[in-house]
Length: 410
Image (cartoon, rainbow, N blue to C red; front, top):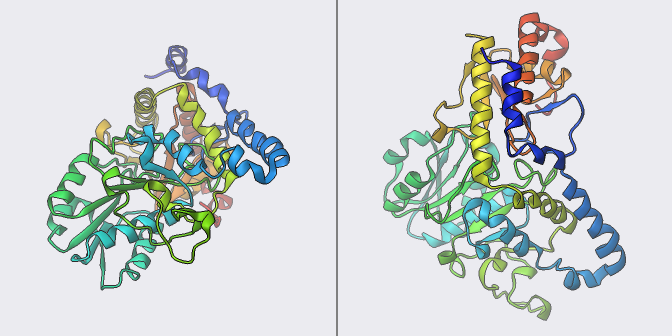
């Protein structure tokens, strides 16, 4: 049996353990919801206060130039780029994830004018599907959006497919897709490949360069800990820059924004996909959050992530045999940084866990979803979380009617 002292020994030898002190965590809580909203780090407060108290309060409008506000989408994009294996000039931070997807899908469809099918995953996050369907209406030609079983991609690809958009780590199950082989399959069919990295960036190693990815987008508020509603990022492979067009152009994507010309001429590189004035306070928070990556690597984080999730799965099966179905893949190469447990009473179980200080979330219809972020979680946290889960299940406290009342946010 795995003991708490075993987990204490793992924490004692964990080289990432000192990073926990970089975050503000509530005493007594075990935060297993970083795959939904990452906690605040100390550097976030430092950076935001610097912007408010110095750059904004004192510099005022001069800070657009003097403090680099205008360039922030590109400079923060360059800072984030190594986390996805991109070049510094291939990443832009702006907008939100849905808007980033809209821009990239709209631009990609113009690159394949003789093709009229977009493929996406029927298990994709719903916002991706909503925006892809809507952007398809802008194309100027009939576009068919097919939501498919991702395992049937090979059978669905043909000479009419313009674009494939998948999420690299399944938001419900935590399954990680093989980015390299899928991208190659799509390219072999003459189509373009776009990835949603919402549950990947900061959690698993990514190599857009080595996988020949065309386009990608991701959010800043999950494993990157950039704050609620943090700006998103988009990636455009260098070969497509100055070729793909921004379908939602704005003045800051213009080649000469302060000439105030009526006609639009796109700026060069990623600047063309800046649409409106950057949200400086939000960008400052994300910028501060990214500082943690100067103290570790994604490879170190991945090693610990797999150890944490292995431990959690082992403890659940040891302490609660047959109670839950672990639907997250056991194979490391197929697992993100979360574990999904299936149980008919998952919603009530999650509510009972939250009352006991284990913060996780529910995904319809029957998934208890737990995210493991190695930057601030320890192995004892995992042990103690399972102890509280055992208490919830053995006491059947989840049968209490108050835990079955659905909140608007789950």
